[in-house]
Length: 354
Image: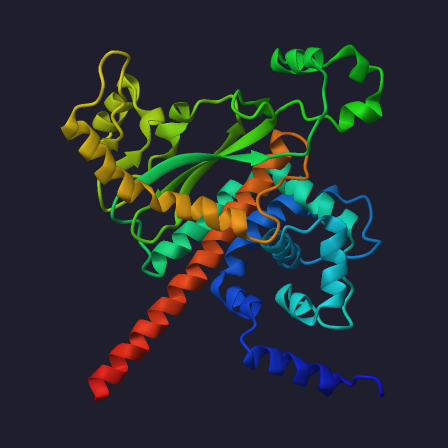
């Protein structure tokens, strides 16, 4: 078998395009260059701060960000994404490299992600992409749904005493004596009574019509859902209705919603000795039929390659990983919405021509 030539590689990529390479479609939907200024401001060293002009030029910032998006699409480790970009032609094309280009290694990608994480930049990039969604006609409409989902993290295997120290914001003495062990311990995650394990929480606001995530917040699992409601509310939704389960029901939250011009569609909660009336129970069921749409978002994230498992340590790294998962969900969802729009347009054209 002869060695593949330049045109053979091009023909193979063309064939993959004809078969419907999903990464090619996704790459065309994201306004990559609109992220460049913010990313380069964080990851590039200013010329005046450089000690020398010698050395290798930095990798292109957008190419590196594309690698992070690709990594999140398939939930790959830094070593795995480096290998896959080397190995798979569609991955190489997605990040914008050719077969002869140098590919950043896992350590370089880790350092790039660390800079974005420390700067908290993923929230800015997420909001910028939301502006792009609105510009394409996917305006938040139909009301907004709020909920939270736990995100598992690497199992810590701590003793009860160590867990209690972490909850108090302290570092166990045994960890202090072993710096290498201490670096591998997550002191930001918290425990839930239901599962008895460490988790972070992904709090999201999803619009009812398009099922796109419009706002999100990442916290440890000890933060009650209701405390994040005010920060999740989206003034841009065309409807004033806010749907949520009974965890969001409180006098303070009801006052917040009213004060900001929203209509509460949050479930009414029964109290001890005061069960719900038939009318209240019926109203809750009607709200549930709408609120259930937010579970589709969590379900889509759960069944995506690799699910939502985190391999990172600490809240700072969790925020960028979960933020990227939310970003990637919106990218996938946009691809679905665009396919539906294209199908509807073709169908309307056929009917008009008939």
